[in-house]
Image 1 (cartoon, rainbow, N blue to C red):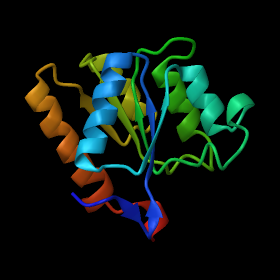
Image 2 (image 1 turned 180 degrees about the vertical axis):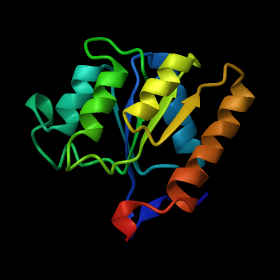
Image 3 (image 1 turned 30 degrees about the vertical axis):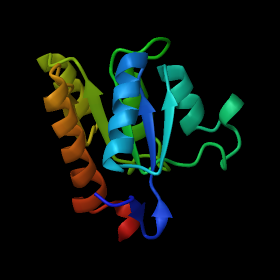
Image 4 (image 1 turned 90 degrees about the horizontal axis):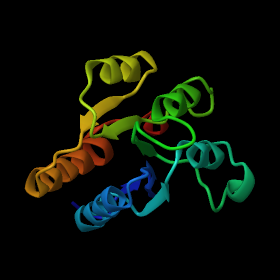
Length: 153
C-alpha cells in the first residue's frame, strides 16, 4: 500500500486501546502497511472523549485533529468503549466518522450493542500474529483505499 492520503490530506487515525502491547502491535502494523500518516493513541475512554471533544490536553485542534477513522476497543478504563461509541454517534459533528470496534470480545451482546450504537464495523483481534498482520493489511485497504467516506462526496 502506498502512503495513505484522502483528498491529498494525511490520514489521521484515532486508536483507543488500553493494552499497551496491543496498541504497539496496531501502531507497528499500521506503520508497516502505511495505513495512516498519523496515529493518535489514547489509552482510556475518558481520554478518547477528551480528544474528540477537544477538552483539557486536547483543546488545540492542531494537536487533536478530527480523525478520519476511529479504532475503538471495548473494555476500557474510566469510560467503557460502548459509551464512547454512543457519544461519538450521537454527536452531529462526529457521527459520520467511521468507527471500527477492534476488540478481543466476540460476545453476542457486545456485537449487538456496538451495532445498536451505530458502529461501522466490529472486528475481533486475532490471537495469531500472522492472522493479526493479515487483518491489519486488509483493514488498510478496506478503510483507507477501497471504502468511500463522507468527506469524499
